[in-house]
Length: 392
Ligand SMILES: *[C@@H]1O[C@H](CO)[C@@H](O)[C@H](O)[C@H]1NC(C)=O
Ligand SMILES: *[C@@H]1O[C@H](CO)[C@@H](O)[C@H](O)[C@H]1NC(C)=O
Ligand SMILES: *[C@@H]1O[C@H](CO)[C@@H](O)[C@H](O)[C@H]1NC(C)=O
Image (cartoon, rainbow, N blue to C red; front, side):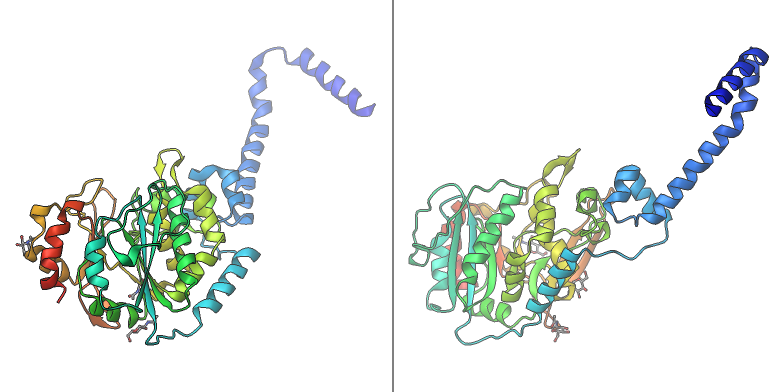
């Protein structure tokens, strides 16, 4: 009753003594100042209460605000969820198991292809005489392959459709790894495409991979729009923006790394849900270019070489890498590629920063590449002709 009376009195007073709008501003001003000040105070308290890596902070202050905050707030320690702590413990345990290389150790060749592999005849020459030191797995996502080599017959695994840039590409890689892991003798796992060819002989390749203490996973920091620009706030807090990495998908990894890759669900699910062409605005996140580089950068940075043993020519700076035609395939080309001993990286920033890194193998500078892509199917005869020379 009292309150209502007071309100009524106030209203009557206002109506009676302050008829014009003239007096409104002076009486309201302090209220506005208080409102603005308390909003600022709330913002600041909120910003400190919610560490800026947390999703909550991003819901409160939009993604742009989130970036703004990261820039002017003091760095806070990243909080690990129970799930992430558990994932890290399991991964650390797997990685600490010793690597045992025996005479019977095999290299798993995992082919990711839409259908028939055009270079089976060349691979057949490559594998000949090395039975027991390799195994072949084929993920054919479209058509049933027609084989021209005995080493490839009945080596298809159960496959599914693969959509470029989508998580289905990673799913196919995981399927290949899972199948290859079933053979305990497989110690190295190489992912290859239908346009890949061997550039060295089998012994060279085998010794290079078996006696190396790292996995060949391509990984670099691209702060531009096609690198860190593809990171999404939804990937937080497990995947901080500054840990987002990029690299070509064609890896070669140790058994321990293959196990942690198929065991991972936490980081994988972030890429499955938030990395794909057009998932957010105009961001074209390509799962296979970011998942494994980011995963290994975060969990075992010193366990990877940061480059891949599969050569590709991006020098034309087009949307797709160069594809070699029969007229390009010469002894000189193969010699040139196999003598490369440093890798270059180009970021997607406006200035396109180029950096070079030497390929170090167990602490020694060595040529970088064992395989090459992309070769047109018509180069098969040329490559077979050259094989006895360059492979020797
Ligand atoms: C790969 O890069 C990481 C940092 O991103 C570094 O710690 C690691 O030593 C590099 N690997 C090799 C073999 O040099
Ligand atoms: C091989 O490398 C040399 C020297 O860099 C270059 O002049 C030549 O054009 C290259 N040849 C091929 C076929 O790539
Ligand atoms: C690999 O070997 C090099 C040279 O012996 C050594 O410096 C490096 O620490 C090793 N890396 C790992 C992951 O064992």
